[in-house]
Length: 105
Image (cartoon, rainbow, N blue to C red; front, side, top):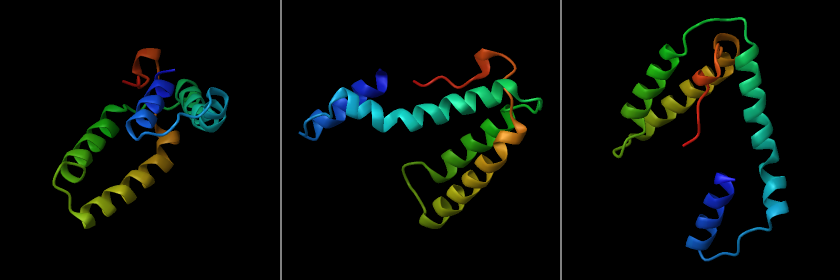
């Protein structure tokens, strides 16, 4: 329910009434299903490519393109690269143990 509390904070911050709990849950249901499907896919993947290389690429891209000072062209390139990697990530990554799954902060 951390996301629900975040939504409440944002709603209160912008002086809007928060959605009813059941409405909010129906909105985020697809997001939750996508995350669970990706976790399942990672756990069941036969590939054993290290995700360290992907994480390093992502960190570098975020540092160079997503920092405080942004260049529109670099950001557009970075977004396209990220989309392309997202398309192939399902075939290359695996989570051999639960500890290697990303944990939301």
